[in-house]
Length: 90
Image 1 (cartoon, rainbow, N blue to C red):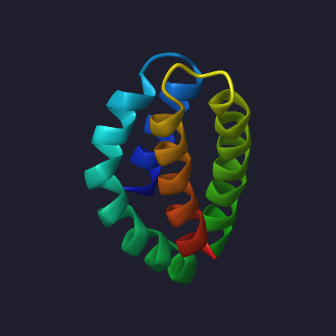
Image 2 (cartoon, helix red, strand yellow):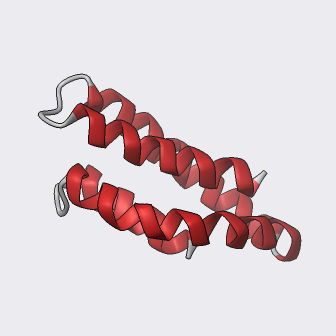
């Protein structure tokens, strides 16, 4: 589940998915990814740390793009969902 959130955000960064579309997908994924991230933090802390690093980079890039986006509200929502998963990863 965490991987799917990362993949969805990556598609926004690389232009494969509009932030509006990602917002819709993440509305469901994030609810499931947060508890999965907490479990991952417990059972595989190294992988959780690697995912944290990826999410940090994605979040920074999305925040940078938010300023010039045609859909800043949706970009912000994607970033907010990433932050929820990031917090759960520890």
